[in-house]
Length: 215
Image 1 (spheres, helix red, strand yellow):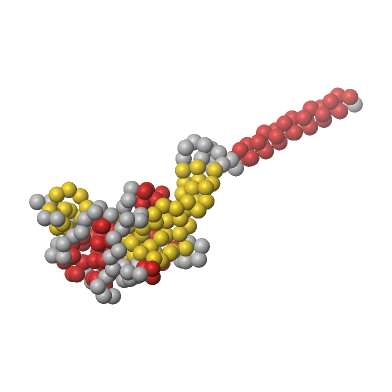
Image 2 (tube, rainbow, N blue to C red):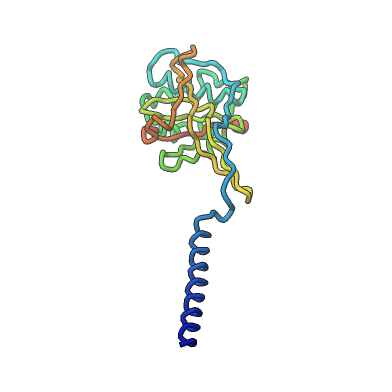
C-alpha cells in the first residue's frame, strides 16, 4: 500500500514537473527574441525648406511639372523650362506615377548653366515600407505619391517609433504629410490619415533625385 502511494506521488511529481516545462516553453514563445519594444508615439519628421511652387493650371502636365519641381527644389536646383525633364512630363500627360517615373529616369535637367541627370524609382503599394519613407525624409529627400489618381509631394510623416533592446527599430506610420501642387495657399497641405483613409488607394511612391553633371 505504501509503495502504491509512493508511486502515485512520484507520478504526480513528474507530471507537475513536465507541465511546468511545457508552460515555460509556451510562455517563452510569446516573448519576442529581442524583448518588448519601448514605444515613442507620434514622432514627426518633415522637410520644411521646399520651394512654394504650384502648377500654372490644373492640367496633368502642369501638376506633374510642379510636383517634380518641388521635389527637385530640395536639391537647391531648378530645372530650366526647356529641360528634357519638362518635355517628358508634357509628353506623358495623365500617365500614372509608375509610367512617369519610367519615362523620366535618366532624363537631363538643365540648371544654372549645367546639366544634371534625373534618377527615379517607383515602389508599388504592396512594397511600401515606413522605415524607407522615414529614412528618405531624414536625408532631406521628399517623395512623390499617387493617391486616388492624384499626384502629391510627400514631405513628412507622423509615426510611432518602436525600439527594442537588441537595437532593432520598427516605425509604424500614422499619417502622410502631403503637398497638393495645384495650390499655393494653405490649401496645398493635405494629410493622409491611416486611421481613416484607405491605404489601398495609394498606388505607389516614387523617389526622384538629381545626380552628377551630364555634359
